[in-house]
Image (spheres, one colour):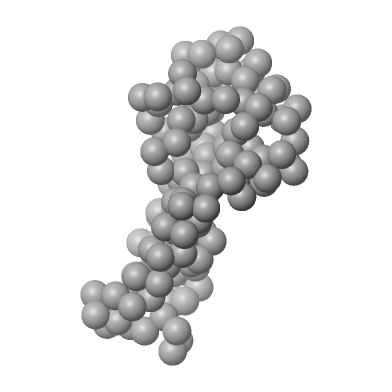
Length: 144
């Protein structure tokens, strides 16, 4: 879940012309793509990781249906968004994707390290979830 919290902290409020939202996409810099250079749909990836972790942790049919549906939505949602963005943005989308790929994974990961406040917020969110989980849901995720 730490990974999920870090992905969320790095993705929320960031411009991404490839995924959900899009209010500030003119501010997107393909040479410094951040989390988008690692995964095109970070919010959907976080939902998928979270849902799959809960499917395996719970294991009963009701949780399989609920969290499995969330995971399926997250895993299929990316291709739906890709088709829509391709239709709306056309050649501009392909050019941006090419520039992000050219910047490389190492540059994208390095740009993430320049986000200490977001990384700390993700870690703090994880700690808050661990502390609150037993009180909110009646299950201690650390104890198993």
